[in-house]
Image 1 (cartoon, one colour):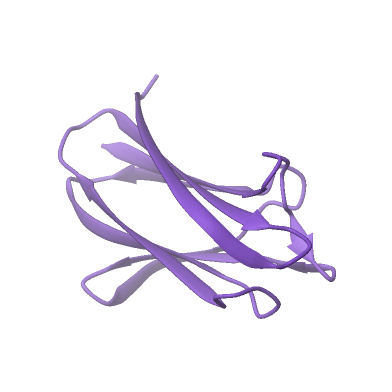
Image 2 (image 1 turned 60 degrees about the horizontal axis):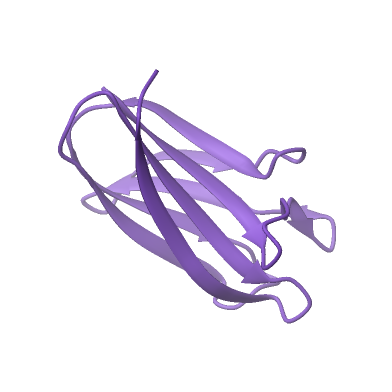
Length: 108
C-alpha cells in the first residue's frame, strides 16, 4: 500500500490553510469515481490519503475563491510503500494557481 500526501502552499512555501476563512477541499478520484473527500487541515494545510493500492488516481483541490476553482493532478502508484507528495502552490494575493509540484519518497 502507498499514500498520497497533498499540501496547499503559497509562493513562499507557507501553509495556505484558507481563503477568506474558507478551507480548501481535496478529492481523490479513480476512473471518475470519488473515493474520498477531505477538507484541508486548518493548521498544516495538508491532507493524507492512506493505504492506497497500486493504480491510477486523480487528486483535485477545490476552492471557490481561487483560479482555477478546481485544479487536478493525475497520479499513478506503481510501487508499494511509497508516499507521493503533491504540493499545490498558489500566488496568495492574486489567488491563482502557480504550479503543482510532485515528488516521491519511501514510506516509513
